[in-house]
Amino acid sequence: MSEYRIKTDEIKSAAQYLKAGDTVYLSGTVFTSRDAAHKKIFGLLKNNEKIPYEINGAVVYYAGPTPTPEGLAIGSCGPTTSSRMDVYAPEMLDMGLSAMVGKGPRSKEVCEAIIRNSAVYFCAIGGAGALASKCITECEVIAFEELGCESVKRLEFCDFPLTVAIDSHGGNLFE
Image (cartoon, rainbow, N blue to C red):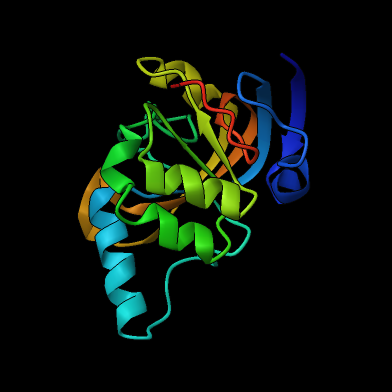
């Protein structure tokens, strides 16, 4: 197992050497999106409307941060169960999504799309959202504010600790 410091805009090239089990300290722009936001994004796509962020090259964090305490960039921000987004993930990966961050195993279809698109699935530590929030320096709601904690947010990560759970070569910590 290896350790890497990677910026979000380097993930596509890093996917060539990342292996399941590697530790990555990720820095750069990441977008939160969970079930309700994915449903709204796909409704926009279906109607050929503009979506909140460019999917090609993006990193999506399956998280719904808690309200932000005074003096902090964000509240507790731990991962949610990724399999709830499995219905959307293959199409997003085919649209150029670079990586997903969450927790738990993924469906066969998502694993195949990760390999097909040279993408990466990272797992964050579940139950440690307050600690994870210390690696987030900025948080801005960019879409679907009415969804509250499930709104789409633009985050800035600084050395956010992750584990490569499924790599672009088929390595899978869950198998």
